[in-house]
Amino acid sequence: MWFKNLRADVKAAKQNDPAARNAFEILLTYSGVHALSWHRVAYFFHKIKLKLIARIISQMARFFTGIEIHPAAKIEGGVFIDHGMGVVIGETAEVHKGTVIYQGVTLGGTGKERGKRHPTIMENVTISAGAKVLGGFTVGEGAKIGAGAVVLKEIPPYATVVGVPGRIVRIRPPEADGVKSGIAALHALSFEAKEAQAKEAARIAEEASKKKK
Image: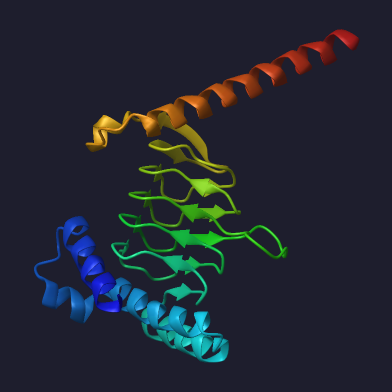
């Protein structure tokens, strides 16, 4: 499994980085690939309850790569961390294949509560440099998060989010990314409908408040 995930990570690097010349170069010089490889060893020890060893391995990876991943974080093969310096991935985070994470990204929590408090990143998401995704919600498949954005709530599939706090500026049709299934599109439309309803309710409440005055 470790080698299978490593091959998937190398393949993801080749697909997403035009500067990547070959697999050998990626294996030797890409800190994101190194960090993920270390993490999977740490994750193994964490699962068998050798948590101190897991944390030591995690800290070694942080020292050598500048990337901090909690040993309990669940990360599939085929994830690409580009440049990587300053990336932080929290304990209950989940990152699915095809995700691209740039330098300075935080997948963090918003408080000290226990349980699920870090985000779940679905397949083929792009998280640009310096973005912060904070909380135990889901970022939908194919979503794109702009540089420096601070995301505090769920993002539907194929949405583009920018700004502080993060706001949706566009929802692409799945076909734009070569996805044939319409399921993601239905999720996106459902999310848009809920957002529209919330805005309309807020507008009505504001008008009612003005009339009382």
